[in-house]
Length: 381
Image (cartoon, rainbow, N blue to C red; front, side, top):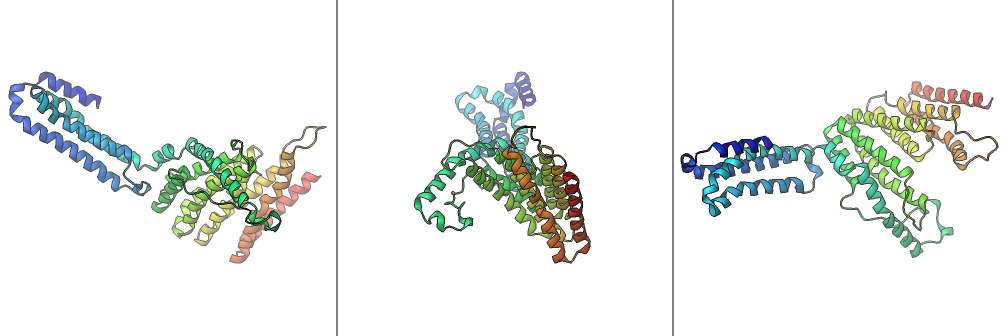
């Protein structure tokens, strides 16, 4: 734009007003034609984009850019009415920038439908964290409202009703909903790269809820964190369900499995493999691996088996240390209590192997337990 403005300035400097006087009408026609075609091409590019469905309405950024371009194209007409002598220089100055403004509009349209740009702008970790903070008072109010209704006495409730409360209405600009929408569109169009980035961002959002520090609430920090984790997991679960509807999504499922496996392994390096994030990731890996197996691809089923066994092995070989002479912290106690539960995916995969009549994979499940048993004996000795 600066280069074109400089060219326009040179044209103004060297122009001959008398020779260009017969082209007054042509200048106005060219300005309107350039602006009109630029706007039409940008709108056409936006409407034909793969990720057009992400937007419910025309994007405000693109809309106002088109309006601004049309307004600039009208400036020569205003100059013609108010300062006729400056009309030709104004046209000469504006025409080169108008010629490349169409490319600028196309770039804006591309960015408005680029999944990675949308992911970084609307579904960043900062935006998700801000949204989670905004949910805290609403969740706390719903929990308090449900308790005040006294629909049932605590002693009369089955355990699965203890955590239930009146639901929150959907938020208009929910970044988690946007994240899931981008993921669903990536699945629909087979976009491996975009889907991998979406899964990565979703896992970071789940990790964000692990140590989330809400403002003071009546429900308590643990309850609020659990509710927030559920909100994030719902967005992830929508994508996983979409993957399971189509047998042609094996490559996308493998991308998600690899991302989740990397997350669990990273947590293991920090001795945090017994956090809820690791259990959720292993559960999703197991679900997607079953989908791949049922779709005809048998390699993925081994990944949750391998990761589950290795994180338990690592936990036995390198557990959290307790300083000599000090009482064992509650965190270490909870780690030791939760570590054996990480073998649950192996048990479920063994049952799945029996259902499928796959004796080879069933042997692998038994073999994994055998190695863990040997490691447990070694640790005890």
